[in-house]
Length: 98
Image (tube, rainbow, N blue to C red; front, side, top):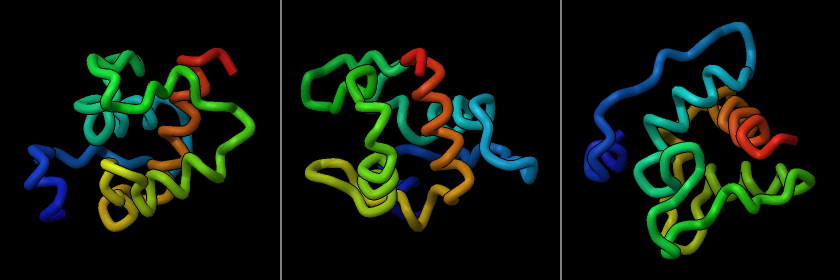
């Protein structure tokens, strides 16, 4: 949690025991991802990966990147629960229309 606080993330979204869903994914995205990846996946800088271009068939890469980090992106695996990572994936798919 120290990484989240150091990065300015102080809220933890309410998690759902109902399983992954896009509504929960949106909440988690807003709490953990939006600062860099932008509102509705529209990043304000080319320094951040444009999630609107993320391939729908590359879920394993997404989960690995979120869990373990990649380049400038920190590892969120100790902060974001697996159910929330799945939900974020569903939210991204919903925004992207897949």
